[in-house]
Image (cartoon, rainbow, N blue to C red; front, side, top):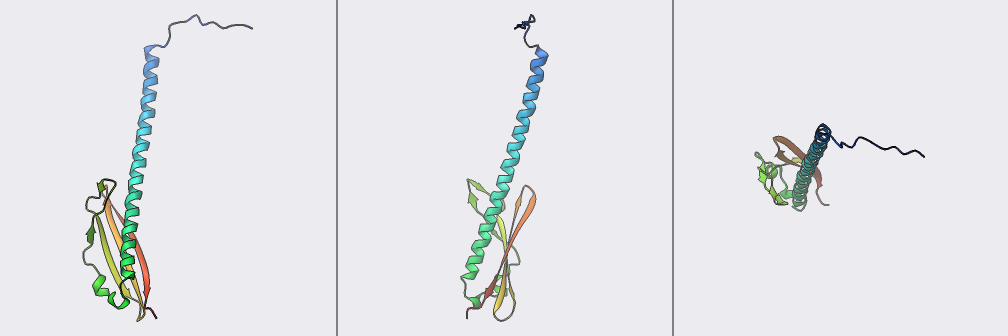
Length: 137
């Protein structure tokens, strides 16, 4: 068996080290960008989940109201009602805006629409939930 012996014992040149550092820098920057994107996506999901919870709370409150007390004029909001929620040591600037609308579908049915809007990083988001109320027999 033959042995290969390197006679060149100079090691790495400064150019090779600099190229390796540049490659390492590019990899680290790509990982940092990926982390920032995932944090932003997680924040969007957290804000959306909170909007879903707010809409659900409003629908439950309206469902627990007597049928005759749920009127179109009593629940239509001309201007959105602001609601601020703090979670994970963070409060959404401007909070959530909630619009409620009740539509009569006849004598025994009403449709309730809850629209929750919020702004994150200059972009507006909306979550709409609706439910049909029926007069108890």
